[in-house]
Image 1 (spheres, rainbow, N blue to C red):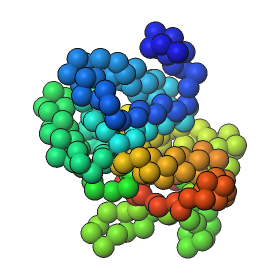
Image 2: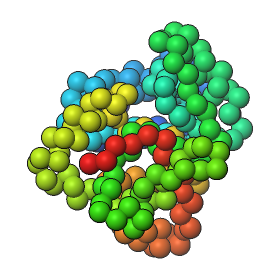
Image 3: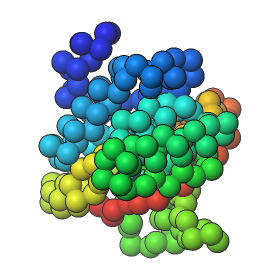
Length: 219
């Protein structure tokens, strides 16, 4: 698929993943794709918050998100060798935008605008946001998306999501390559179920290392 086709079919997609690696510097210098594609994907969420969309980056892919101005007011991470560059790009984006800063974190992956089912017993919910000693909050997994099947709750969550930054677009940034695996397992847990993510990890013979969530709504 070329970028022209991607733009044409963009409304059909729920998830957009931006890898890092070779080519990121050229994209930033030339203001090239996928910057416009990413921005258009984010705009879709703002104009139609009824759909649950996810924007996820792996490694230095988060530099593209930052340059596109989509990480202002959010928290994010990137490849460990690029924390300083990430902070510089985020500050430049803030100056071009509304001056909101980005909290660049040294984490495995960072999730913004998370959705989860609180349930009746909070202590049994694997996705409740817990306070960390440094004041940040982390997620250890997710129960799943069963609540989305109920129309009343769906309407309520749509309204809540629309009030979040970027129309409630779920924004996930991850560190190096294996951190991308961890973030992908989180996404499976978020969109399907925690048990499904655990099964994928088992089949891969991979130990799922959790990241953190920094904002969320209960559905």
